[in-house]
Length: 280
Image (cartoon, rainbow, N blue to C red; front, side, top):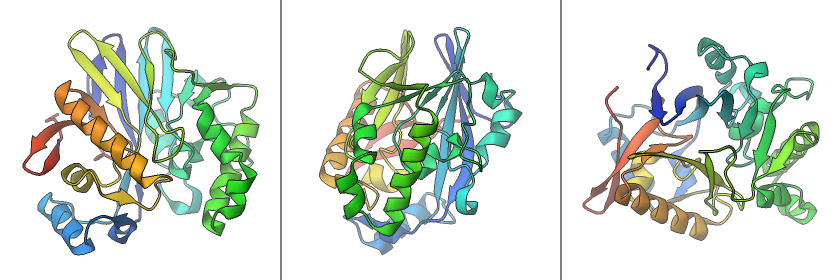
């Protein structure tokens, strides 16, 4: 079930595979609600040698005759990430095989792989699913005007992408995307930030997007937010709810910024929670 290169989990009819897009350089100073030195200690105690780096995962879902991709990485823009295309091929899938792309939200490390260097769709045969609040946010001219120059670039990228996929863009409405895959609205990081859940018998998987960026830190201290959060208070509330639910329901978690193995369980700890990566 698991290839030498990728970690997969079978949930009912669906085989879910974590595909790395690589790392992006970041800094623990991006966090608020914790001293940078304390955050560094947590990273080091967990064996993380580059404590400021953020890993990027995408997820391939195959089953019931369908091939779906959850997020598309950075596309290698600015020499960041960009490993998804090669890893997708190594998993035996071409972009033309993908019939559905599920987007957690519009940040560049999630939608960057949707367009080629000429601004054309890479996944030409795929329907693109996005929460309507997400599209509304990135198309809001007032928010664009208030954004920093860097973030304005993000607005431009999202708009170009949605325009390029206009014929295949579908909006999530709370119903199953296909039978067995349910969207879960997880607002705060962005207004339309969305996870995706698969349930089968006693197994349940939640792909929770960007609930955490630094998994060990933000599980131990769920109140810690990152500068990328649009609404830090709402993101915190959503994170606490997700962590509690993951423990209560014994969910298998997939997250875009977990370790490259891509899957984890959430366990209770003395003053919060902790990430537990399954042995593969």
